[in-house]
Length: 286
Image (cartoon, rainbow, N blue to C red; front, side, top):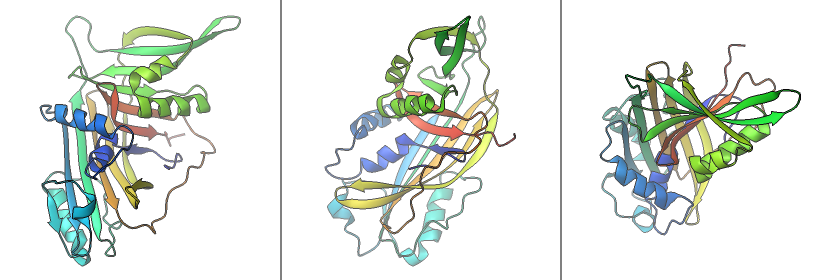
């Protein structure tokens, strides 16, 4: 599980793209993301690609479906081979390849990135939609729970879950990532919606290696994620590197609650109701 004592970004698109490579994989949502990935081929603002590195001793053909970009490597030289592939597609600020192990036999990698500007019309300018939960005491009290910021390509949205109560925020994010945007907004009760001028957050951070474990077809894999995030008044730029390796000895990050979270929030890039990228931001400038 991911640490929530620091900002991070992940790509459900990238992770499910890699999971789809395994034979007989019935993981939740994998088939949905396979369909989404087909649709995204015609989109210019989203790019995703996979790569498989394997040694002579790995049983890659037994576990994986027929795919194109496979490279047999000596894992003593995996950092050189991996870096060469990575640089053909993009660069990541702050990325080190120390997470790559020479003891591996199999490495699956995905690069997914998204770049787009805000939606802006001549008549209304840039606007965002707010989903509020509200309660009544002496006065009506509105607490914003979910903000929906449309991108230039209107099929994409940046969704921000802003804090009210920490437990509510975490549950709402889990619903968003597992079931989609419609299910998440359906959980906000009572519900009040409004439209106002778009006010984008101004954040930029590097998400360092964040390890979790996946079990696929009786195999235990370590998933490592690394990313760069930039959101400002111009638009959104997110890119994530996701790697699955066969190293079962890797340490797994545990969730620890921050002692003094300062205006943290979750965010996601949504396409056809499903999150392509998700993240958590905690402002350290207290």
